[in-house]
Image (cartoon, rainbow, N blue to C red; front, side, top):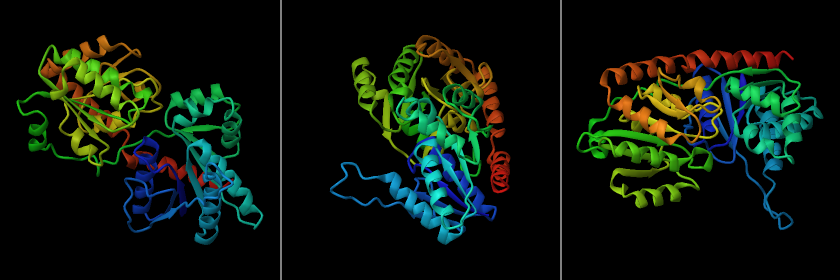
Length: 373
């Protein structure tokens, strides 16, 4: 099968899922073509994998270059000349919307191209709820041949928020254990925790919905009770606020801000606890990645997080903003070695349920449904 994958090529969960899915499909023998404005961060050129860069022409007439038009033209070209069988687009807008336009352009030349759309969250929970964009979201979903969502919570929110007539299949995010099978690096652990302190980790894009200042507050509460270090991975608009709060609380020496990293599995492997106090998470892929590294999770019970992080088993969940409970839960877990080992094993076992080898066939089945329509 020749599959075109359209995604955002950044460090976000949707781009990572799209990239790892495409790579796994290529290993199985499918021919996979990625189409984006730059090469996805986790994409390497392998057998059966091709990358097509979307170039946006700049004209004096346009204040903002029309990316959607450039994407539609690139998709038209790739589908037609590479003879793709279907398109798998990640995000309703703009990708599914552009895919529909491309589909109509190709139909004029007698070419049929099915479209599978995967909803990841932001396209529904944030951007899509803008009154000016909601009609485009509904239209894009309804005109896709097959629609999937990464969690039951996201499916429910989509159906409640938009005029959707299309059936939505839940296909969860996944872990490729060939990537997330990282051995504990003692030297790296000692670098961040030279006196044997426990290590807390947070990974995100540091947007307001990730509530990174709550991470700092939780860490500060734990730090008052036991020796711990905090490693903050990622970057974004709220990084300055988090750094200022560290300075204000006097814990700068115990917190490391690494910025964006491609070594997240290696970093997670040295962690003792993962902290994710988000106010929006349609799935929580990074929490699943932590669990795959035998790391229990302290998180909110928002969105799809409670489907991944099982309260009282793989970690603890709390109401949004309940910094005290999250801090107390972390302290109780880090203070009880037997309980911690139980939670760490549970976390790994639950993560195995999301092995890519289990999830990929669900996507292949969705492709076949789309092709048969």
